[in-house]
Image (cartoon, rainbow, N blue to C red; front, top):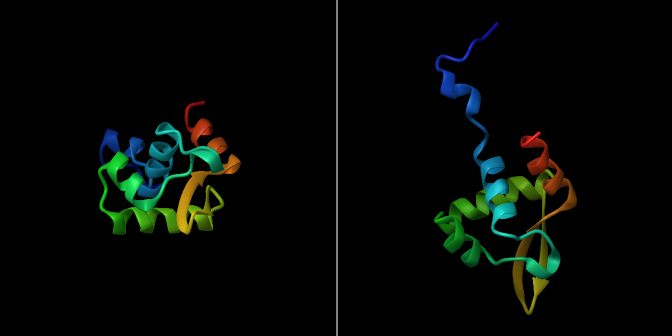
Length: 90
C-alpha cells in the first residue's frame, strides 16, 4: 500500500478541483453570473493560460459550462460542479 510521505499529502487536491472551488466561492454558479477568462484571472490571481487550462479540464468533466455573452465566452460552475464542491465539505 502506498502511504503519503507527509501528513499534508492527505490534503492535496488536483489544481483544477481547487480552481473549481475558487469559481464556486467567487459566485460563478449560474449562466447569469458567468465570468470571462480575464475576470476569473483577476479574481483568482492566476495567469490566463492557467485559467484556460483549468477551465478546459473542468469543462471535460462537466463541472464548468461556457456561454457566449455579447460575443465573449464566459464560464460558470454547473450543477455537477456545485455538487462536487459541496461533497468536499461533507
